[in-house]
Amino acid sequence: MCNLEDIADPIEVLAPENLSTPLVIASPHSGNHYPADLINASALSKTALRHSEDCYVDELFVSAKYAGIPMIRALYPRAYLDLNREPYELDPDMFSDRLPDFVNTASPRVAAGLGTVARIVANQKEIYARKLTWQEVQSRIARLYKPYHRSLTSLINTARDHFGYCVLIDCHSMPSAGLPTGKGASNNCVDIVLGDRNGLSCSSLITEETERLLGNLGYSVIRNNPYAGGFTTKHYGTPESGVHALQIEINRSLYVDENSLTRRPGFAKLQDDLRNLIEALSRFSTEAHTGLAYQRLSAE
Image: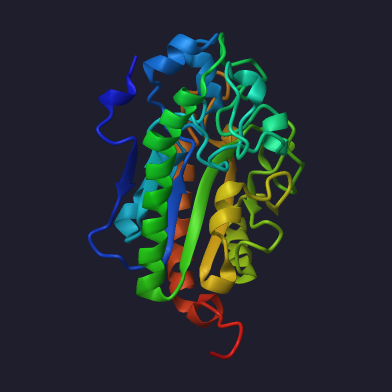
């Protein structure tokens, strides 16, 4: 198995030679390097743990680099540390020692078993065969969480400094089971869910254009149901300061066998469609400057 030390950097930033767009692409859940300390502490096999991955989402969007769009992706798995959470959303029952008072132990994500360190994988199976220690989690957060968010913050600030605003696209996949139905959707459920925290994290200009572009590509799209956006969209999405964050959730059945996690024949088409999407969205975002830039709220 891959030890964390085997990875020179736990994140990867695919940066274009020339920044040509205010877009930034993030893939926090597609990492598949499973450290030995996770494997040794888990009650599950690596195959079972992988069902929490947003499998291959980084590959679906990797063409962003060639469109002049920077992309950040985590190289380690969500089952090890979830970057789309507050840094300290933790279940005290998972630990052998007492957690500090500043830890958020009462969030809905913690209650569902999906805190910063998850208790369960996507199929509701318990991840750990033993209690964890506070020191273990501190180490994960220091080595993984903080570098990811420092790098993401830097990419956002660079885009905003260069263009006057940034459009962050946070990329995820979702299981097909339990999704709402959608007109023309694959497998009688929606293909893509756009999350903008019901309009709070992203200008409607971006959300509406993304929905239109995906619809023209033949996908069934809905907004904010059942995924309105996670920590990333909430924390970074501040349209009034010129940062727009939109979450994209892609139905996994479009491109991967959800049991074996092997790519389906539709993978290449989806990858090509998403390349067209981000190129078109890049052009639109650049042209829509006056509606996306920092809006001064009062006279200075």
